[in-house]
Image (cartoon, rainbow, N blue to C red):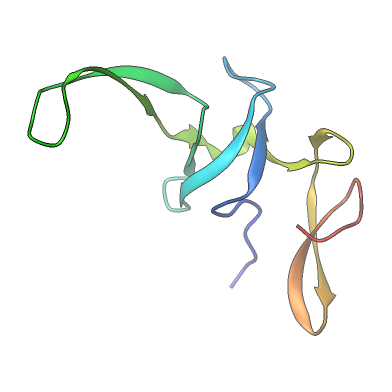
Length: 103
């Protein structure tokens, strides 16, 4: 099984599109569709009907964004980084190319 570039709970930066430059945490990834839901990125308003659980009205929701528009975020360099695979303690890990540290 191939090691994935972006996983749940990763901090990512948006490379292109309307939200370019924004960072957020990955909430969900769907590798089959090639999309991820990132907190605070690609936010749209949705009209919700009032129910017992919510008050209704306009609600902000995060919509999925394509994986090709996301890069893992390197906190030291404060930029996006590419990912390579390596081994640490006998396990496969993802390593950021900018800092050389495991993600």
